[in-house]
Length: 96
Image (cartoon, rainbow, N blue to C red):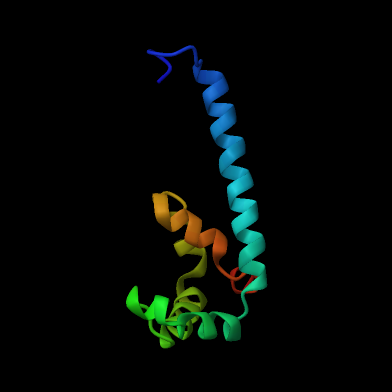
C-alpha cells in the first residue's frame, strides 16, 4: 500500500500499532466481564452450539491456561485470530 498510495511506512506502522493496542484493550475489558459462569451460559446458547462449541469447552480452556498459560499467551500473540482470543481470555486466569 505504501508504494501505490500516499501512505508512508512510518505513519502506517504507527496507525496499525495504535489500532491494535486499542482493539486489544477493548477485548481485554470484555474478557474481564466474562466469568466462568457467564461463559458457560453463553456456550449453552444455540448459536454457539451450531458453531461447534460445547459447555465443557470453558472448563477445558481454563485447565489449558492453568497448565500452559504463559507459553500460550506468548506464542498465541503471533497468530492472527488467536491474538484476539488471548485478549479476551479471563484476566484473573492470566495472572496465575
